[in-house]
Image (tube, rainbow, N blue to C red; front, side, top):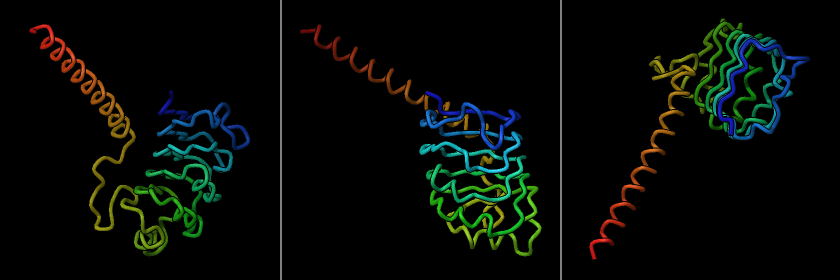
Length: 178
């Protein structure tokens, strides 16, 4: 079961990434940096997707499909795309779980009161471009930290399994004492 998929620098074909289908329903992290995407319209439905990296593409709009296709998104990176105005990111309000949005190197960042207006537009956001409303830096705003977090969860599961096995062994040992 695939939870992470990194397709950075692969070439998209007419806005589609070949082989990326809704079979990847367990996907939690998808990275498509610099693949030549002009739109997110052809993304498959990825209900469990939490983190989507779309930096260095040519996306200029059509973000309303994200709420439909990736309703549980918490982190979205649109840095280095062709996003020019606030109306383009307005559809992201429908992503109720969205905590972190990156728009570095997008024209929209040159607007007056850009940060203040994005936080007003998207009240669910905690972090914009790695900083919160009070300009405090996000604890780990990079993909590696997220991926390491996934690894930690697996370690915890192993410990739980070992603990239960130990408990069973002890109980069996007690039964032998009769």
